[in-house]
Length: 89
Image (cartoon, rainbow, N blue to C red; front, side, top):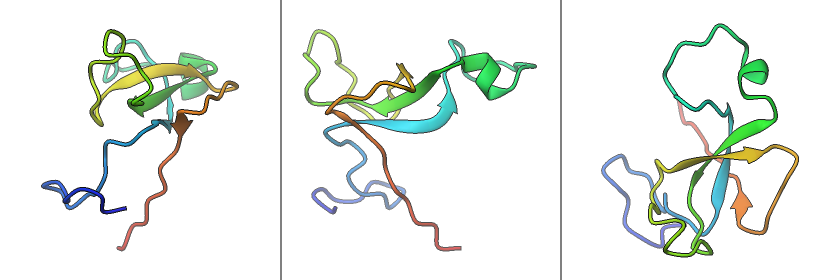
């Protein structure tokens, strides 16, 4: 941690070498109201965010924290992980 300076929000190293799992189910159009529960709306597809440096430039030109993609919840790869956070409230 702390490889690069913190961004404007005080967060370090937001661009890593892995895609990161999120808790959210995949939807083609985020922000559109859905009457279904998350599991019904997204099924087994979860959102992964970020980008892996293993992606070829032609495939993954968006190495940034906001990049998002669907991923089967039952699958894993060597460039897919998760981020632990601590909230000091």
